[in-house]
Amino acid sequence: MTRKKKDREKMSEDSMKNGKNPPSNVENTESKDVSLSVDKAEEEEQEVKLLEGEEQKVLEYHDLDDLLAKYNKLKESNQKDKETLVKYQKESESWKNKHMRLQAEFENAQKRWNKNRQNLRAEYTGRTLKSFLPLYDSFKKAFDNDDDDENKAILKQFYDQFISILKFHNAEPINVKINDSFDYSYHEALSSIEKDDLPNNSIIEIIQDGWKMNKDVIRYSKVIISREPKPPEPEPELEPEADQEKKITQETKESEDAKKESEEGLLNETEDADRKIAETEKKNK
Image (tube, rainbow, N blue to C red; front, side, top):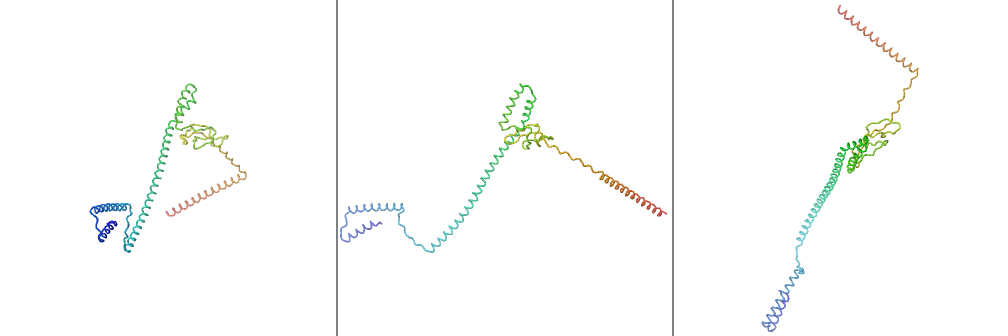
């Protein structure tokens, strides 16, 4: 019951006590309707206040021991939650590092695979072009040996077409000239000839042209190179006559000594043999 309703009932009771006549039925019904409307309005206001969170809070009294127990329990649970949080953070960091490492390895593997694929493609293209290089050699020999201009014109059409195919794949002949220095990364020496008028390892003759594709060599240039002649061997010095005579005398002495030793050895052997024969004869007698 609301405060206003209580006040009205109290006022009515006071009026009856004081000897005042109560209001008529009409007034009572009107007052009842008004009070009902006021009560409804107050209830609606209370519902609005409840919705808006304006309800008055009632103080509750608790025991101190219960509050301390709840506090300690909450503290322990908070500590456990912190430990689990730290544990999950470490696990998440480890998984994150693993993920980043795997991603980096995958990217590196993909780069290596792309590079290997490009290298294999270049290698197979180079092998294929190398198999067609004997045709280039045949064209070049035909140009050098054939004197007919008509044949040269016909061959030049095929030759130009063939060269354009090779150049489309970035293949070109290695530029080699006579008297150039030998380079093992582009040239292959078939033999060497002694030359006084040229520096060592100079190209004297080109046997076969070399080819390269981009920076890779398809076929090395086969060449003949020069080499420095060997210096003449010094003549043996003649020994003086006195030294020669000494050597001869020493050699003769050594030979004579060897003869004497051999003769003495033979004599000793014969004497021993005679002794043995004499001893055997005595025993037989």
